[in-house]
Length: 470
Image (cartoon, rainbow, N blue to C red; front, side):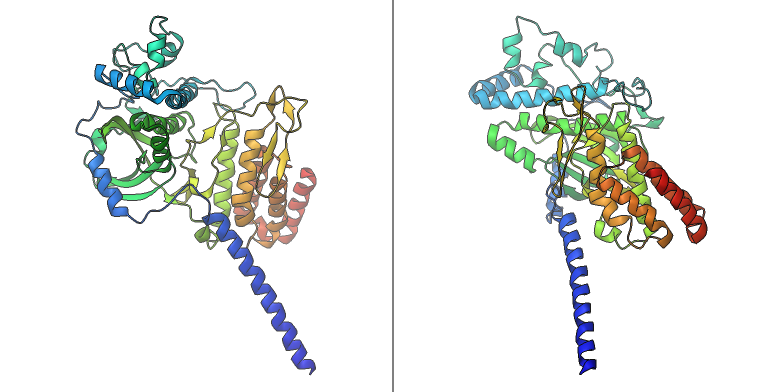
């Protein structure tokens, strides 16, 4: 009888343990897979076929970054559409203008005084949205210098037409290299091979292609059948202006790839403007190719590989917190915004990055609240801005999407106390990104030099670190 009871109790324990493991696995799976914003379509052949049919009948000059080129007919058509569209269309034009202004700000922006990053470099190698050779147009001056006699007429045009009513106005990259590497252009992708559709988000479609049957690159372009384009056309009925609104996200991403140079940011190889789908000057970004970050697979890799991913992420976030543009936050922070390139973690999606820090009033208790699914945080208000909100948002997202799953599990036992402290301190936002990086670099030092194998030495060093952190 006693034996039967013991067997029954043992079976119950096994069932409870199995249920706990299953619930943890399902929770992880739901958290990682059921996040909207990116879908792997099944109609890959149709996507690739459409990509080829989108290729232009006319390719614009080598490395000129345009935002639309119009003649008298375009102006007349745009004017009539705007007059018919009324208030809704004016709202669309305002959105386009705001995105254009945002790109200009990033191109010309100086770092915040509080930043500790490198001084802002003049973009002598390559400048987004400068005039093409022989054209002295500057987008900032165009915005500021509005002819009073044309103000009413210009405001009725799409921003791209407004900036080009007198003559051809191009947003260009002047030079042909990035960090001494020749820049790719339309001719580089004119005869690409092995084109494969990889996936799409709300705005962009991404393709893999081979250049000269050797270099594999990623091609990013606006997805004409994507969420943003379909909703915009349905609401405003203007495919051309809806495309321009969406395309500025790609232009913004290319701008940030130029300004933010870091090993954990995907490299921009070049871009191309071409005519497609009856829309002039559709943009394609040519970037480094990475493999998708599959968290389920990553959970099955060695702890060393998982630690490397987390360390790369923290180094990236440290750079973004002190970047030449100021503190940069990734508003759409999800594992699917990252890829692996030769085992190195890199952020691939920057179109939703922002350097704007939330404004606040010292008398308000709700201005600086960061809301997450599991909990909220309230940050202090300093000089009219929520103090450190961009850095803290990035760090907590790193905790909830990466650290909590990748850092502690199957780690060397002697490193667990320090790793647990890192996870807990970031989960509570007790530490900032500087301290988090310092502690992870210490873990790397201990692991690389084999100190984690020596219990006495590791215990001594971990005790010092724990006391210092407290």
